[in-house]
Image 1 (cartoon, rainbow, N blue to C red):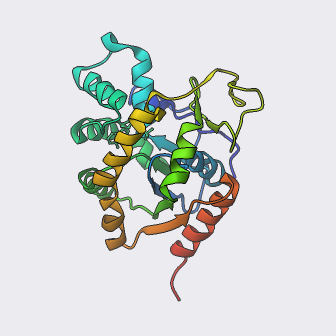
Image 2: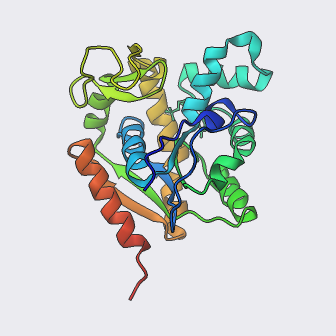
Length: 253
Ligand code: AMP
């Protein structure tokens, strides 16, 4: 197994950037989509799964946050629309999201596999992903759907803190950094994301119900959906997810 950490540069900065990580030589890389309401712990699970499976964590939300850091003047008009949607807690238009993903198709083709987090978010995006992958001769291995009751989701979201630099995710009680408000991995400041504030949370939950929940139906029909109970520690949930997806991928007797 490789010990090289995926740096995600090609994904975060776009096609001109290259990835410093050499993908591990895997017999069968994992190509996964993670689903679940905001706050269910998808970002944390994506990081843990990326470490365990040596696949790259690809988050469309992180791409938009990285673009935001460049400032309004450096962005295309479409990206400025995306920034405004994100700030308001609304979904970015499908056409913009799909442009962002198509530009980064090399990350989907990577021999190390991938873990898509936050994409697809609508059935239209799922159909487009299916088409892109088919054109590249690739297929998803599983779609992990993390499930948790609403009151627990709200508690998780309001305590979440994200690294301003490397985007690592912490929780003030569930997964605190060693030093308060400082990232364990890179030493930079942790912040509460704008879209984790209560007014944005409500809008995001409604957007999730309306647009993303139908994805579970879409992937159930393709026999890819694997439901994961998201109670317990991040490590327990991750172990549960790996066991469930390996069982789902094992050849049926
Ligand atoms: P996330 O970090 O995945 O929660 O994404 C943060 C914000 O970025 C979302 O609330 C949306 O405004 C935007 N976003 C990220 N991914 C997508 C997507 N696949 N479709 C639409 N909007 C997205």
